[in-house]
Image (cartoon, rainbow, N blue to C red):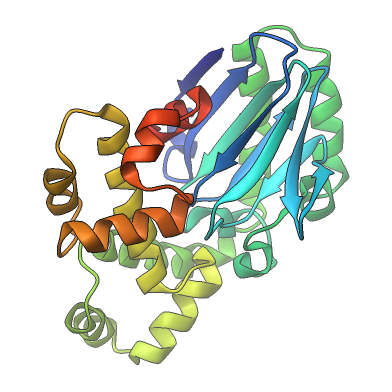
Length: 271
């Protein structure tokens, strides 16, 4: 398996967390599970194989260009054949810069990104299939994103405001903190919750929980600390609370996850 991350060019760094390349090392099919990350992403499927995701107890083949909404629960997927994925990951609030739909409409969905972004994305996908060099592919996607970004600049101030709140909530969610942020910006806590959900897809409390879970997932994947230390390092009240929430987001206890974690999820956990 090949997994590598690349930083976007400077102008896009406030909006795109990273690009990444995944290549399977065989034609072997396998099952996997994707966990909540707190972010959205777009994936170009460039290999001969395909991916399937589970919905209502049935696996469906994902489109060639996938837009992943916010995932709030474990999502079963299947890799079929030799897959190559080139993707980019947004920050929690930054997907809203690039399209007009409410971000929350895509929660727990994998949709055809060309239906959201339009035919130019389909053209870009076809060009990527014809291009061998990875850096050239990334540069082509960056050109597309810059052009897409310039068309939505009127929304920037409001989304930047949500980005500031994301930073405030990443390590401290409490009623007092919500009230403090509401007071600072002279808006009601109810309106704050509505805006946050509109532009990130998640209510503030769930965003905080997923962010805390992701931190614990990194620690569990590293397998260097006892679970009690992981729980407290990630901000849980106690180990029992940590185990319950970890199982909610993964379907596994921390111990059973560490024993069976797949290579791709271990790679993604560190990103």
